[in-house]
Image 1 (tube, protein in one colour):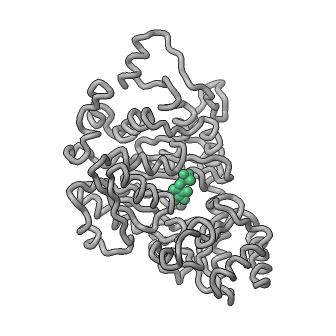
Image 2 (cartoon, protein in one colour):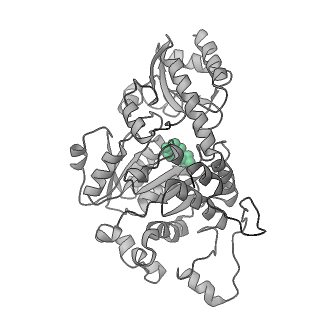
Image 3 (spheres, protein in one colour):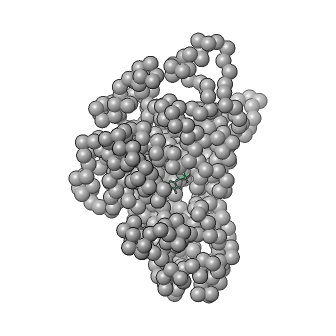
Length: 423
Ligand SMILES: *Cc1c(COP(=O)(O)O)cnc(C)c1O
């Protein structure tokens, strides 16, 4: 199947007489005939469902679809993108461990890694993702367990050099984890470039309609944990909380996801509700159509903005003059995403007046949604920061993040035009 067909037909595969659309298993528990069978489930000796905090059939079918789109071996849904990124790291890191992440990642992930996980004794070193590989390699320590980045960074829309990061990670014997939220598997499949684990905030394009918060983790199955038993003992030595099961021995390519489900979901419980999984499954059915339209519209708007006299700069990798154009052509040949960043001449006041003058494009915290929206980090998400601090985080004080939707591009351009006329 081609990827467009997979969007419709992967995951739930109805048998004779079964519902055509994925059923919502709105049930916390599952029934069994014998005590023995139930016991074997708890020992992970049988596969089956017992409690929705760990697994639910609706969620699993949707995870399977995302897994197929990414070309992975196993996947799980989580309650949010935050939970996905937390689990992805926490599944292989514990107190005393260290990992490396790009400093250009989403602000929520930056806080999670830099502040909250630090309190758990896990240290993250943030790097400029454009640093030469040799410089990044120098930061790897004996206790470093992962390398992390975003395919397309939020909100700066920089493209990550996936092959460079994969090489650095594999030389050091650690997995490369990529948040692929903005590109989606339609526009980039990081496993094809050597990534080991992919995460998503399904809240964004995968849902597509701004109706449900959710996340997903996909494992390529390619990282050989058993080659580095001292580094990843949680996967390669017996788990006492499951009668001594060793994940790599029992589950092979499913080891990482099984451990995250059996331990982290059991203990932390960041499960996605089956109803929300149902919504994102509907989103997935049209993801390929929407991504095409998002990219076409964003390209037109990026070109309009770069030609406008009141615009200071535009970041969109689809523009031939963009710093990331070559990387985009390599990793996202069919387009990057609908998000772009730009600055208006004249600073914060002009930006605010411009945004307040828009009629169709809405000011919203959301991003990567069917309806066009925008945000000025310096006045909204990052308003506690001074201009200096913003620059350190790589966010220009005049940066406006425009998330281009799937409306008619001319209507959007007309709205931008009339707002520019008012400043
Ligand atoms: C929004 C976002 C997240 C966090 O996801 P939530 O679903 O809001 O928890 C993580 N990574 C990226 C790139 C995002 O855009």
